[in-house]
Length: 484
Image 1 (cartoon, rainbow, N blue to C red):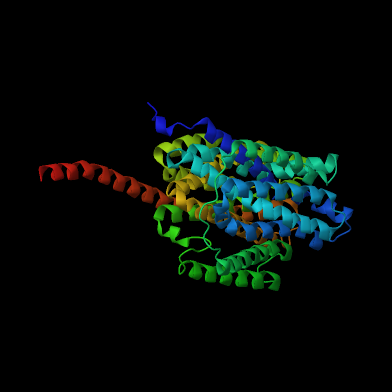
Image 2: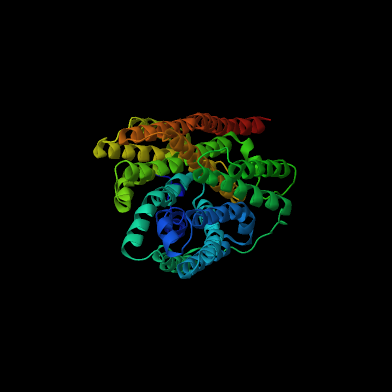
């Protein structure tokens, strides 16, 4: 019989639904604009080098604001969530009204400031409402849009650009944002402002400068085609140095912007590294499939989006199952199964050709999606379940930062592998072989997550054994005390 304490109340599901609505907007906007860059370039009379800042500016704003989420949440998670929704929705409306490239970039930055806090604060509220015993089932719900958005984004963006106007890529967020604000006002419990620690200004300056510089440098890899450009080397090195200085600073002060001491726990550190690797494999791999379908198979933008859907479908099918199993057996075994399946299911893409069966590739993508679903969500749930409630505000933005940086690194690495493999290629079969080489690199990125998942599995077993020993020791200690 199910323990009553493990039953998920209707209130928790309502909180989760509100978070999902907000999350869909912010995650979709990381990919929906990509297919419209060429259109934006023509409509706003800008070069591709200039218009790509519409994407880069949004990414940099996300990277800058995520680290401060934990500190801001102490003013009240609901209040911060509402402010984030309003900023994102207002930024979306302004983007749709933009008449020049500088205006659009400025409003995209405003969007990013709001969007950067929506998902971390939403996850924080869900984690607090669910508790560790129900974490897997609840997190499996919010993770579905996170997996579907990178696939649905290009499809939806292609349909809008092709049939309506580029402005509706941004206007579409306005009614959804209004609905999310109303739902949050009515559903989310109001949390009174607690004791707010002084802002770690030095930590904020280091992290809010270093992380965007690192993100910018990695994004420039796709533009320059390699890691040797000054535009890549300088921001990456400066970013790494600043993030490293932040780490040293955070371990020395009592109340840092982000509490890095959490990584001393084997469960949290291994789960975090696994999420980093999965982020690299997922978001890095997502740049290869659309390019293959359009560059080798000459599919339209809309058809390309539909052809990438099996991966998202597989993840969406697997996550609810993985969520229920995580609450029973822990995240380690499922994460290990998921990342192994993801790596194995990527192998067929390493053998891809110019005329490989679409059905065969769709099946492989479906299995890869199942692997991602079993790998991503249990890993995230295991990380949250290992924490105290007071630590959630610091841990949530860190997990989001790791996932996004992992995605940026994965995208940069695979972009370089692909571009170098395409050098001197003049035939479709040669191009397909180049994509196969890049997919082998993607398989390696997936396989790298196996090691931290093994560590996570062992850490969870050790934690359960320690709890069992403590439970057995208590009656004995009581008997000895009575006998004395």
